[in-house]
Image 1: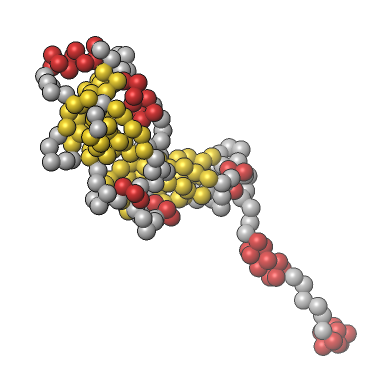
Image 2: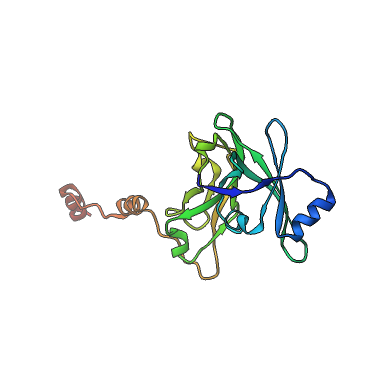
Length: 215
C-alpha cells in the first residue's frame, strides 16, 4: 500500500483554548493511538489533502521532528458548515502486528450482462480487511467480465492468502440487474451444442426404408 508522509509538531498543551488557537492558525490537532501512550501533534491542514480528499487509502508516516510514527487514519471530524478538518485520530501500526482497514473495491472488465442492457450495481464499495501492514492492498479488484443479468459477486470470490476479509462469504459486492432495455442473455455455447444434438434429424437406415416400403 502507498504511504504518505505528514510533517507535524508534537503538542504540549491539549486544552480547548490551545486547540482553538491551532485551528485559527490553519493547523489541525491530531492524536495517534495504539502505541504505549497517545501522541498529540498538529500539522497544517493542507498536509492532509492527499490523505483525506481521495477515494484511495494510504498508510501514513508522521514525521515529528525526526521521530517517525507509522499509522493509518482512524477517524476524522469536519466542521458541519465549512467542512474544514477539525480533528484527526490515527492508529499506530507495527510491521509484525495485523491491522484492520477498509479497502476500496474496483471492478474490471466489461460485463456480459451490461452489454445486454443490464445495470451494474455496486453494493459494497469498501471491504474491511485484516492483514500485516505490508500485505494491505491498495484496492480489491473484482472481475465482472463473465457476469450475466441476475449474477452476483460475493466476497468469497476475492479471498486472498495475504489478507483476511472481515465479512461473511455471502456478502454481495456487486450484481447485474435487469432493466427495461435488457435483452435475453446469450445462451452458453455448451447449451447450444447440447440442444443442437437433441434436435438433429437421424439419417434413415436401410431397415427403415424397407419398413416404409412394406407399409
